Length: 344
Ligand SMILES: [Mn+2]
Image (tube, rainbow, N blue to C red; front, top):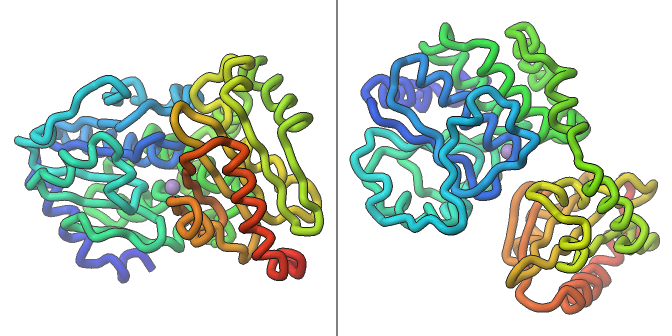
């Protein structure tokens, strides 16, 4: 149970929040629904307590999250803005959500690290780095949003819980579980989802905003990717997709358009491991997905300078897209025994 496991942390959280006036909340770089939903849920809670609170995102968030209550209050740092080491001076509290390492803060890493402000991290990624004064981390949770629900409801602040908080948390849980298709086998997750619905989260509307909001260009882009850019290695139960810079220009890629492309090969019967390689300005951005026991967190960390979760991770490669795929194929051939014999 959350209350027993985090008894001390809940107390410190309460004390720090009560004693703090100026508070900043940070999601990770390239924030997803969980990071943004979690940050906004805390933002709303603290606003209701009359705190001087702000959400600072190291980079833009996907447009399909614009409907989230208070998302227009997020302060985005973006590519061009310079961040001084003193950026977080004069604060009482810093709260980071949904990341387990300083590297996930990108441009805000140094100023966050240098700040002497008390730091709380709330996260569900495995093996967190130790850089916070208070760490509330549990990788058995579907999402940071679910953890934040448990935290709020175990605290003295639970009377502040409302529909807007519920909407943000629901969006976080829904997106981090692929709309309850993975990382969501715990009955506790569904109990919490039930509570969020009771509080007024509009499930169908949230789904529609997140998953049925693509542009025509994005749909055509996906068609192109499935037809021309997907390789399937049936024996190795692996599929991978590559996207060139030219592709991105041709289909007028917008931020977030390639999100979830990595999952496409996993929809094919028998495929348990999928990867995507996207040619970005000066490197190849990589994402991995898997089913069951095949651990893509370790895979990404070992070969592609990355990490994440057991079934969802990311990495990078500095070289051409052809070199990246060559390296990938040669590595997975070393895993052939494991993959060929894999039974989901
Ligand atoms: Mn998450």
